Length: 225
Image (tube, rainbow, N blue to C red; front, side, top):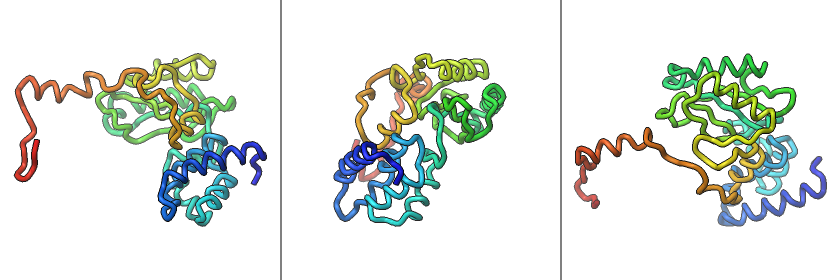
């Protein structure tokens, strides 16, 4: 493996902590967080990362590669410091997602799954981000940026490339890098869960309407409230 001795030692120590969370006879269940851990160091899942995961979990390299290529959160080539995903699914697309993607692609001079020359931005065309009540939506390193326009999206990536602090619409007070977020996804606490707003009024409108009308979910036979 091409990891430096220091990096490999740190990876193995963190991986041991992850694996210990699972029953000894189900160690392979740690594969997803192990891949996020590798990604937090390399910025993607390299062949060396696959080999390390294979050794640590005693599973074949093809099995590790199959998982790493199935989930789009895992990157198999160097990724940007900020992964910018534009939702172009039905609602976001109709409300401007396609225009946002095209504006960013032209502004950054890259296409889907490509990275700017400075290594700052990787652009992705994404399917549903499960935030239709705030459409059109972008996510950057899995944090929400709601109600976007082509102009606001371009301004956002300009700030990221300039190294200016950026706050998600919902989430921590400051956007974190792709590697930092990957470490959190590996299961290591970042203590940022209580920062920033969470659900806003668009997300809760259905609940508000139900309360205004005194509506309640029906209780099915055999269930209790």
